[in-house]
Image (cartoon, rainbow, N blue to C red; front, top):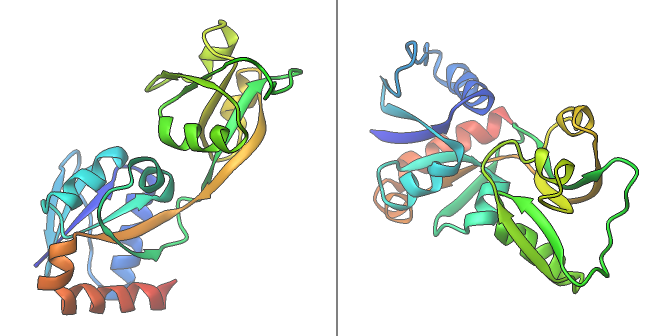
Length: 202
């Protein structure tokens, strides 16, 4: 039995579609349920940010999580495969009509990704003040809380609608299959067999 942690939303749907194809089985979560067992698999429905925690601590053998989350949290897991779904970018957003001033004594960045932000701006030798927010990040530059934001962008529509524009792209992200290090030793055959099947679908 392999326990698989999936992020809520579109990535979970696309991952389950891959499982349906491979195993010719239904793989449907019942309404609002967070656990599902099907064949040799148990699926957990988890918040994207929490997936590394479930996998690192062995509550899940494998998980599907965005590369942005892996780069931000740097969990001690085995990175198996880029699933090439859930594609997005991590971008710097600023107010429309403004420029990013990398020579400012200190740039105030609102984000839920402090590590990615720090690393990116450190490479440009720009001093940062990180303002950690968990939602409605687009609001920060509009009300003077921050000079810019670092956030995940799929289409850029949310930024545009809020009077912001993408100034720079920090990284491209997509969903990755990861494994718990112990599970990868103990259940290696099962995990590699699944890995091969998924890889063939991609």
